[in-house]
Length: 368
Image (cartoon, rainbow, N blue to C red):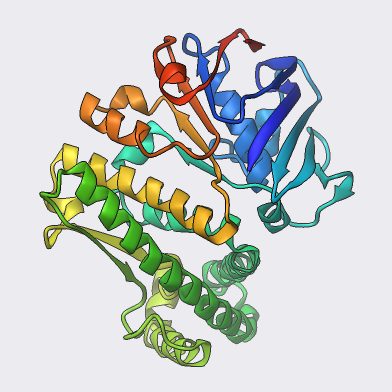
């Protein structure tokens, strides 16, 4: 799986730019605010249909442009794909794969995958549950298109239920629609739990190995997927999970109406991380939490490789500068075998270590 060429027009600070890339390591260097992260954002967007930074597509269109075009040429599963996204200020975007329009972001999961590692990901362990849920959802949406579809439908149902809870005092008739959205959330929630349970089992296996190696065999990392309290076994069949979710939702019915919030469902899930039996969020040192975050990201990459038979494209956005030499070496020793993009402020020894090319980015121009 590799990105051969990227073309950008009207995207962020890129007026019109095109570049071919090495199949191994691509070091993107330059001063801050020149467009290094924007380049990685484009690669992520074309693989997921969603930006890791922008809330809306309009935010990615350059200030002097009314539209933006992003095109990537990829080789994946011994086939060549051309993914193009056209973004507009006044109407909906258009995304095509080999000139065929796609209807959902999930369809991009069949083209190519990216694993993005940013400096803020180093604090993944210390953040709230929402950050770890986002990590799970981002990984699974690429890996399993059915999960992406179920998650999108679940969020639509939750949004409708939230509107009813917010407005029912002025519109009591809205309550008659509440059972329908409850059942949608229960049915779809069971699907989400099944996928998350399976993914977390593999994530725990691979992450434990990486963490142990990085810590010199001194520490043991463990992960536990946590969903609603009425679900005793998150690996149960869909029918059992739905029954448990229904029970939990019924027990929270009055609390939801009082708070005007959806309090029950897998949108409250968490991934509990422990080091040597102690909760990492509360007790781990800064170095331990960074090692655990590294282990999670590298484990995500391995899961993709085992599922697809080839490594996803790994994007490291100024992460190495945030790590001490020991952890830098640990990462560099484990990213061979697939294509890598690394942004940094200064050209260094990475290409000689990994093989590849250096690109300088200056004012929205890519200079090999």
